Length: 86
Image (cartoon, rainbow, N blue to C red; front, side, top):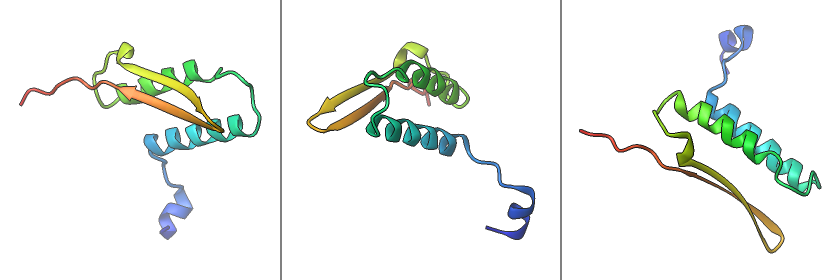
C-alpha cells in the first residue's frame, strides 16, 4: 500500500464490501448462528442495490437460495442480466 493511500485511507470497492459481508454471514451461520436463513431477504435487497448501480436489472431477476447438502451449506445467487443490443 502506498504512503498516500495509508495517509488518506483507501476507498474500498463496492464488490469487496459485498464480498466481506457475505463472508461474515456465512461464517456466522457456520458458527451456529440462527438455524434459519433470516439474512437472505436483506442480502437479496443489498445485492439488488449494488447491481443496480452498474446494470439496469429487474429486482425479480435476482434470486438468493441457501441449500444444505450433507454437512455443508451452499449459497446460490442467480442473477439474470438483461441482453445488450450491439
